[in-house]
Image (cartoon, rainbow, N blue to C red; front, side, top):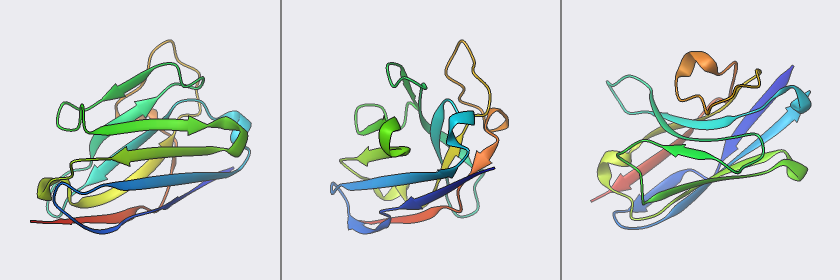
Length: 126
C-alpha cells in the first residue's frame, strides 16, 4: 500500500506563489508517474500536471502552462508543484496522485491513478 500526504497549501494573494509538496510512504517502488489534480467548489476534479517516473517528461493543463512547474525527487519519494503567478481561479483543493502501472505515456486522466492523497487547500485572493 502507498500513502500520499500533501502539504504547502494556504492563502495567497493573486500573482503570488506557493509550492506544494507530496510525500509518499509505504511501497513507493510500486508507483510510477505522479500527478496533481484540483477540485474547485462546485466543479469536477481536473488535471493540473503530471510527471513521468524518471522526471524527464511532464504534461500540463493549458490553464496552468507557463505558470506551474511539476518536479519530483525519487530519493525523497516526493513530488512538488511550484505555482507562480497565481490567479483567483486557481483556488481549489489540490490532490497528489500516483500511478501503479508503468505506461509508455504520461497519464492525465484520473482513472489512471490508483493512489490519492487527502488534498491541500489553496486559496488565491484577488
